[in-house]
Image 1 (cartoon, rainbow, N blue to C red):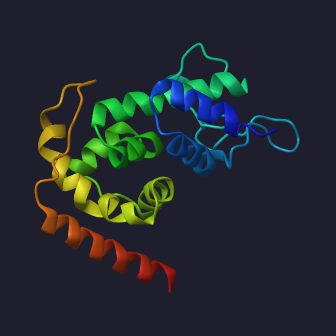
Image 2 (cartoon, rainbow, N blue to C red):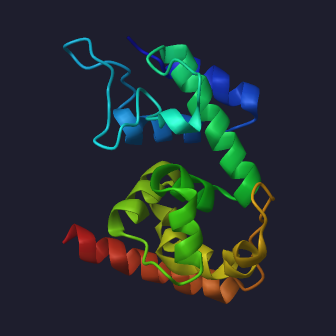
Length: 178
């Protein structure tokens, strides 16, 4: 069954770009709720369905139901977008977890290539430079003092840093694709 329409409608209703929601669903499950044998698509860590929602993220929601799964995933994306104020951090948190993103921003953890590729796959290749360090260094001061649930805005004051990050991202891609 094709769930793209349901994902797009839920995203629009939540004020999220449907393209981003569809790419998250594609990265997570290839937009599939069920495996060929009829079982719900489940990750090794226990995330379920189209949007690969962890049961703890949506307590009481029947994540085996495709519509409920989409709504729970879109709701979580909207919450993370509101919290972080920008897509790269929100998408990294959706995939990798808020605690790990916070630790990476604080310099306690390195962002794995898998997470960088995930963010790049959702936002497009041009966003890889952000996940490779730019958004971490820009968001660090705000994340360090943020309270849970507070919105975080990352500054874009230094265009030369953005250009340097773009170049670094391009070099990283060339290296990875060779």
